[in-house]
Length: 202
Ligand code: PCA
Image (cartoon, rainbow, N blue to C red; front, side, top):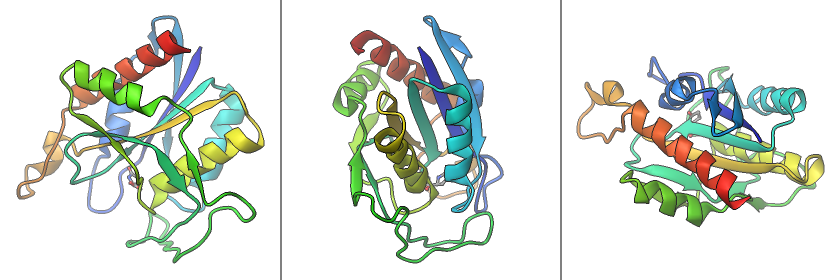
């Protein structure tokens, strides 16, 4: 089995992105699973294309994308990707789409084709806070998640796609007031559990 793990570059005021820090720290081989990694741009125009390129290159069985969700307390396993971009803040290219459909003639939403409930249960069993989330937002993470799901329905029917939102790292909240955080090691542990669960159930 081959898993493509993606994280994002920093954006906004942040100097790091907790998603990429965790993906970067994840081993490249676990339980006979080959892990390939990519850091995606926080860009409405470029992120989906960048993902398409690496999917074509590596032909992974599973795409597990990870994004930072400052303010969230737990690992959020996303269930739904929506065909909509409506950015509250400009992306790293200065682009700020307003109520823009991501793909014309495509469904309003896709569900992740990973066993989300089973993944959340497995992460929680290891003592790591995790919940199912029913909204990945309307920013770049949702666009990437939707693009990946669209690849499943248009090109790679056997590919499994999931999206995890993760809290800030502790170092990111030192100067913030009452903001939740999670250590990168814990996120890495959760990613390992997700991969282990997928190997066991598929
Ligand atoms: N989080 C943003 C985009 C990149 C990231 O790490 C989001 O939640 O859309």
